Length: 145
Image (cartoon, rainbow, N blue to C red; front, side, top):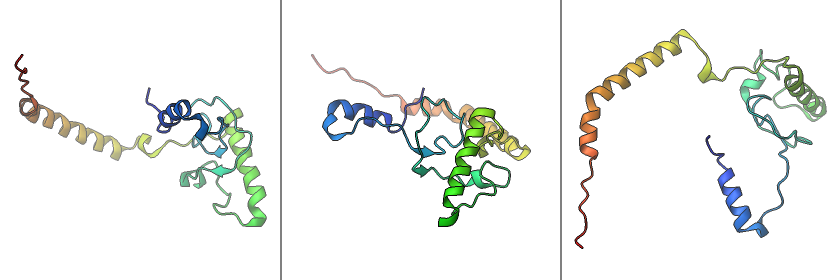
C-alpha cells in the first residue's frame, strides 16, 4: 500500500520528539475524502471546522448542488447543516452516488487516447529498451585488496 504523505512525518516525529506535538485528535475536515466511501473511515469526525473544497461537489448533478459555494453570513448555518446532512445521507443510504473522478470517466475520446499512448509506449519499449539497457549498465570494478 502507498504511504500517506504526512504519515511518515508524524509517525516518526511523534516518537522522536513527542514534546513538540499534541496528542492525536480526530480530523475535523469536511470532504476528506471527497465523499464518504471513497476510502475506509475509521472514525467519524465529531465536528467540522474546515471544508476541503472540491468544485465538482457543487456541479448541477453532484452532492452540494443548489448550495452556494460562498454563502453569505445569513446562509452559512443553513448551508453547513445541509452539507452535513447530504454527506450523512451518502454515508448511510448511498442516496447520492459519488461522481466518478475525471480520470475514471470512460469516454470514447479517453479510450482512444489511452490506446494511442499504450501503442506509443509499446513502440518506444521495443525500439529503445535494448539501447537503454546497454547505456545503463554500470561496470563495477572491485577495489584492490
